[in-house]
Length: 261
Image (cartoon, rainbow, N blue to C red; front, side):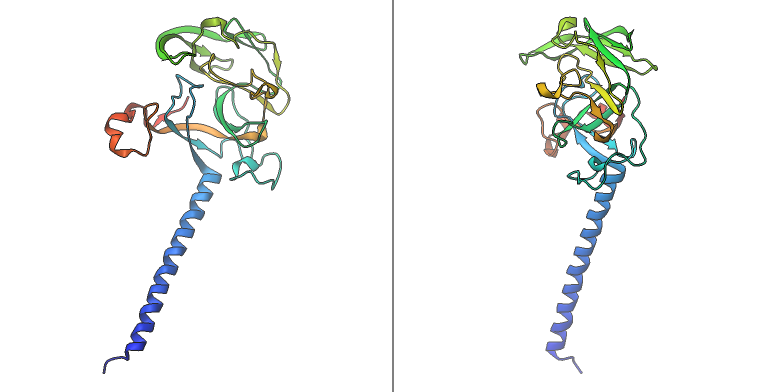
């Protein structure tokens, strides 16, 4: 004997409701997992400016480890004031490339290299970096082509700079050793703060510029978001990463999965 039509209809409705409910459950679980991963483990960032050329290029997409420096309110989306300071904190090391929240607004993401540690004295003299009176070793490297202040492609001086402690990285002096921020006062880094700089020394608004001038100033430890670890994707400057049909020509394949140093 066949079942009544009304009973079949009720079963179908319940089955559909069950399917929709399961779908919603899976989506919610996936969002929660993504939120936990983004908050606790890694977060993707992209490079909108050229302040870290030649280490990072405009169009680079990075994974930043959230666990490297522990967690603060800035580790959470929208930085809710649920606690102050850091938990499970591990202090940044000189030479790290780190993402942090701009101190003067607490919301804008910046990425720079850690140059000065708490208690350090940092100064630029004729384009040379001095930390605690010691001049960082600088050796000439192969010139690269980048854009000058007028948007023109020009070859610029490149150097291998070695910081106290032994970390080496490339820097460029787009305007030579007489750029606007190539001669500064001595900056004394307060306790619990860090001095950040870009590798593109003449095209980086960093700790050499105070917040009253629209710059970065000293960065509190609490404002650190994480350490840049690896380039997971990279497209040519001016290209959109989502335009996948252009990837064969716009993706910088040689930069994919390169560690950030």
